[in-house]
Image (spheres, helix red, strand yellow):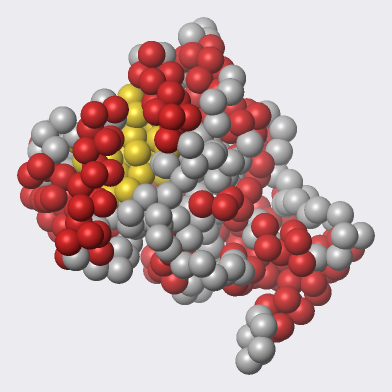
Length: 379
């Protein structure tokens, strides 16, 4: 089993650090692929352009891709908008899409990740050198869905992260992928709250902020503020989210998963390296929750809105305190899709979540006020 690791798009020491991690004697899960995006593209992708550290410079991106390939790593470019605005059906929009995909093929990109099924067929019909991975935004959550996407021609399936702890589903999906010679991947550090009603809307907002000619409105991250408020009101929500400790990866390997994906395109290079090294070694160090994509705590807009005298708030978890936490999910004793009624598993472990209670109260009050103001007629 191997790792698909995120790049924030900066040309710095990142690739050299990845090579060092791969060469480590205690590395269990090497990084085989780096996934990234251009700052924007014709249809958008899964993160707002303003929050990705990389520049708009095409030459800089091209050089980074060359660095990745030169290190013997595969490159996967995200083209995973869930809504394109129908641009693929206009002459101008279609031309821009083809121009973009031609550029990726000429760069020697190995994979393109998509969420819109039409783009699977479009790419495979016109760009023979590109392989296609279904995005986590494709919401693949059943054997039927897996088979449909494989029939479209994808080379890799990634399970919807809201089902990431359903080993019952994985046990049925993995054999299908093996039989069809398609890779199966699982995202293991996503912070999204389980059953989030804002998820699709949130992704649509991200799309609009990562299109070449997207929205010019400065959109506040209201969706993220919703999730942050829930976590602050009840910190057990962070345990209910579908993420895994580095120490838990062997369960995926044992069931036959090919790759794990790590979220982190908006993180600093240093934070990403620490996270990737922990998962590559299968061993946590320091605050486990720091490996979960930090945008999942609260939005950058909140940081700018909040009183400058309120210092940043972070949850803390020690991986050692969560030994055995994941076993009921693996065995099928707990199935989160059935709801939490009568199940107190996460609550039992919530005593291990560490945080400053007084600071939490201040942040909760600030976020609640901001959310209230964003619902007024005049912004």
